[in-house]
Length: 172
Image 1 (tube, rainbow, N blue to C red):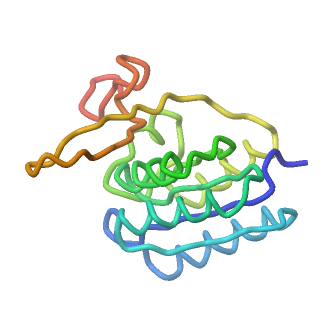
Image 2: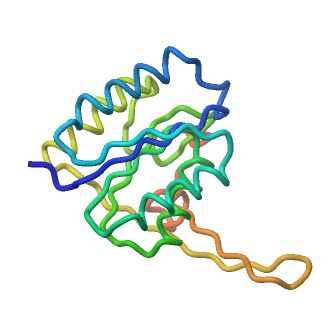
Image 3: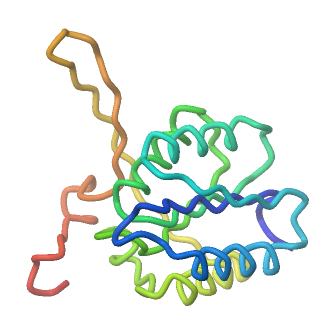
């Protein structure tokens, strides 16, 4: 039995070099097939970070049952998904990340394969086996030039060494 009751795959169509129709169709099919036992399995295609954030927030607040959200994109898409989840204040969301953008340091650090199909297979296998890894989420409040507050969340480079490696590091 899975630890979640519903799942959402968010694919940023413009991440990296863009996502072709065949890749999107394969990911969608795999996601729906492997999670068919769940009562709610959704796939959303977005074209920017604002839409990824809004999509994650809507899904997170739809109900309070445990959920999985997989971000298909780069680090910006993952950040947007994290911000949408944090905005909703629902604590029972597991997050997965596929390396489909120009960079996704956290997914790379966790060993997610560069191939999104292999990455999704691995994430679903880990979900079925109950394998998860905790990571920190950092909340930052900044101000615009007009003096308005803005809240941002981050999962990369937020642990002062916990995830502090970047692609340029010699051991990466």
